[in-house]
Amino acid sequence: MLHLILFLFFGTICVAGAINLLAQSHPINSALSLIAVMASLAGEYLLLGAEFVAAVQVIVYAGAIMVLFVITIMLLNAGKEERTKGSRIAILIGVPGVVIGGVLVA
Amino acid sequence: MSITTFVIISIIKSIAVLGVLLTAVAYSVWLERKVSAHIQNRWGPTRVGPFGLLQPLADGAKFIFKEDLTQPHVYKPLYIAAPIISLVFAITSISVIPFGNWVDVGPWGTYLQITDLNIGLLVVLGITSMGVYGVALAGWSSNNKYSLLGGLRASAQMISYEVSLGLSLVGVLIVTGSLSLRDIVDAQRHMHWNIFIQPVAFFIYLISAYAETNRTPFDLPEAESELVAGYHTEYSAMKFAMFFMAEYANMVTVACLATLLFFGGWLGPVGGPQILQMILPVLWFCLKVFFFMFLYVWVRWTLPRFRYDQLMAFGWKVLLPLAVANIVVTALIVAWRA
Image (cartoon, rainbow over all chains, first blue to last red; front, side, top):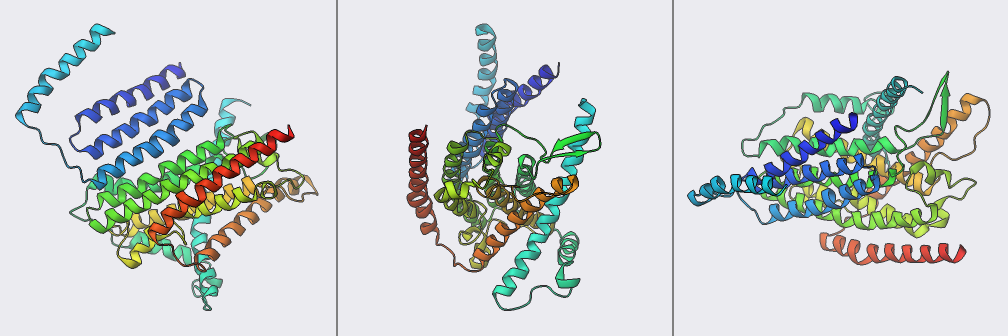
């Protein structure tokens, strides 16, 4: 029971972080959401009993790779992305399209 | 033992360890001021209480009452979150550090450690890796060129020296065969301290840890406040105090790890009645940690500062090959003996 609750907790954070990654306009917020995804994946690994993999996930992904991402975003001064008319149309068609495609495949 | 007993004992242990850690952080500031003063042939704080011992309380009160400036041009969410991230990750790593042996209080008994994970060493490494974000995000969210450059330099330095830090610990792992901190200390019984078995790893660990905690001679990110500005230039009062506490808490963690991994943790001469046998190991542990904190301060006020390119070259071109060579030699010796 507790196993299920914890699984849903980490899973929700993971999926919410991933969706937030796509929805945010400033790349630094996207990078921070990706860190949340990595950390929740480490939690999932712990639930599977793979504690070494969980620790290495935190050290390598969240602690080194994402730091490099964040350093790059800061150094290259990546700004907010602009929402033009074309990108709005792409979101309007694309998001339902991907959801329908995912439901058909799964 | 039942689950409620376990939870209650864990809560008591956590509160006790947290209280001791925060007091240690406050008094390591006092230690630094007194030792630096005596090295520079002057007195340190002497007026606030005997030997200036109440100075940290006065400093704490000052930080609480200082004006907390709110800048209009910062990126507020990360500006407020960065010192919190720094402090949280600095304090969390004390949870896997063992202070002594098994103690029995009445009908209950527990290890003197908040939790004995079988991957304890990796957890400490992971938490120090995550602590880099506090520095990087503080530098960026301040919306200030000097803060940004200071934060970038600090985070680049920290991730560079994390590599040699981790690799220097692999030598200890090969000799011990376990990642659990309690097992590593238990393997050093009867004066088989790892300092005699792995001296090169000890020096690499110490140097990498000094760079990791941004202490002299690697304190260019910090001393940028003296030169130009640093990543905590836009921070005042309590937020600056949080960065300050995070730095000293990191120092305490490094000192604890150095005693556990190389100097035999809580091992030392014990004897006498039961109560003394439970307290003496903790005393030995605290003495060794105090020695490392003193060494930290001593080195800071003795050595001059590295230039940034010298710092990075040293980390990648000298310490990393040395750490890898140490691993190779250790593995060869262990394999030859088996």
